[in-house]
Image 1 (cartoon, rainbow, N blue to C red):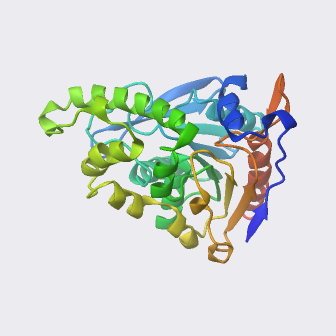
Image 2: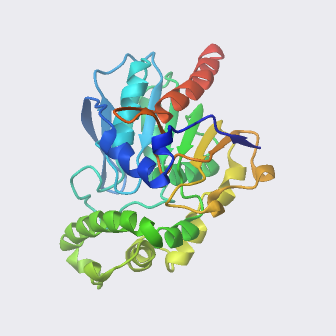
Length: 326
């Protein structure tokens, strides 16, 4: 079943592009954090960002996964970490490889279907905190990754999960972001991706990657020339087909809230599932407005971020239920 969202934007914030762009620039919430480096089994590393001060281990642990080229400074991460910390919970962000400000050691990076690093981090946290209630939140690319993780690992340490503005049909999203005003977002993301990969390839000249990164003009082309071959896919279409989260929603048994705005400028209606294809574990909420990880309302000089109320409120029910039944 698809539930209509209760989110209602203010009159000044009904435009999807305003929601997407201004959410970043108007957000003033900041959360102190401390980094921790985890060594991975393949010799690479992952950086975690822990909200400070640390909560005691009786409090729930909420793991965040950022979007494409995001990091702990991303406005949605900062805002949610502050909101969760205010609840008395312990937020921690997992940076994808190469997103914490330092190139990772291996040529391998991250992508929408890369679940191994998340599985390692969540397993490590469960071993470190065996009695601690855990949940996860994934944004955009991190949301699609989280869907793949939940579908693959039915026995996981999470009592609940939240997926926000996820490109669950990757091919359709790659085409959409290459049209109209959405190409502004594509250009911004590509600039960051190109810079990071130029640094990475400078350290891996022996890898035989012969491509002019500066000539890449779209995300699809980037995925076709770099993401796919480096991570074992035939081409971009093969990557999109194998890693899109939409067909994997039906396999999820962990209680999961999926939040999506129909006007998201990164996507089309192709990411919206058929209502009868959703399993009982998923609560799917669709809003008419909200843009991409926007969901602002209130006065323009003091906007409020609906996700920072809706997500903790929904998680609260599942965290309390899990604690009561331990």
